[in-house]
Amino acid sequence: MGLKRNVSLSTALRYKGQGPMLTFILHRIGGLGMAVFVATHILASFLGGEGGKIANNIYEHWSFQVFIFFCALFHSINGLRITLLDLWPRLLEHQREAIWIEWAVFIPLYGIAVLVILQTALGG
Amino acid sequence: MTAKSKTLSLTQRGFNFEMLMWLFTRLSALAMYALILFAILGALIMGARNQMNFADVMRWGFMPNYTHVQSTDVPDLTPWSTTLWRFTASALLLLASSHGIHGLVVIADDYIVRPRGRLISRWLSIFLLVTMSIIGVYVIWTA
Image 1 (cartoon, helix red, strand yellow):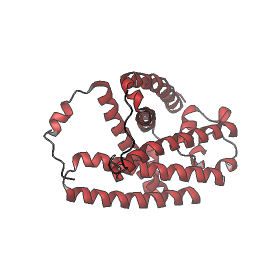
Image 2 (tube, helix red, strand yellow):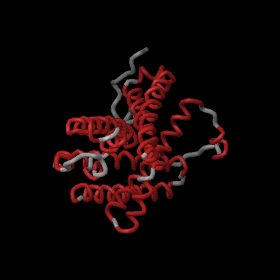
Image 3 (cartoon, chains in turn green, purple):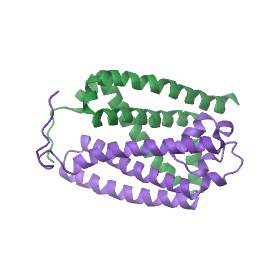
Image 4 (cartoon, chains in turn blue, purple):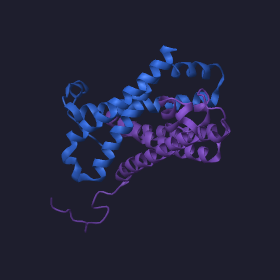
């Protein structure tokens, strides 16, 4: 287990991995966001009461919905790309093209959902 | 491309717990896509086309628990709270929690490098997995 690395956190943050690195970071943010959300959501629905109501108000707010839907949709579409390319490694050659397809699927789907969420929340 | 030799034994090919979890992460992802697709199709059959908006259908898809359609125009919650949907929701929850907790361990391992810290993170993750799965299944079946 003794892992030795020569890379400091600040160097890691300045690493320019472009498209694939961006999906890697967003995949982590999405996964972490969902893990925290699902855990608090389960706990709040189990405990109920005042704390449950406060938690409910937070994640029923449109800004939180926009955030958590980004996490869930990006994580699932990016995860599908990773799964397909990992299970059929010959496709790994076309990783960058796969990432472009991924954005082409993600942006319209996410855009429609955000539009609907905002319309329901603000449009009345 | 040259074909890789498959005459090596499993352990020589690097088959260990991490490899098993690597595979599990991908297979559980595929299973979750199937379950989400099943839930969305079910919602459409049960009348989501006229009674729910796109975001509501997606929310039901990610967790087919009937409390997730309470705020929509669905008139009768009975078909949404059947045993079938409770089983689907439980399967999604268990797959998602194990997939997610393993993801947390992978992320933690990138920052926690000392064996003692990793041991603590392992036990913490096992504790989280067990408690969250039990509480979640309890909520799904008693809500």
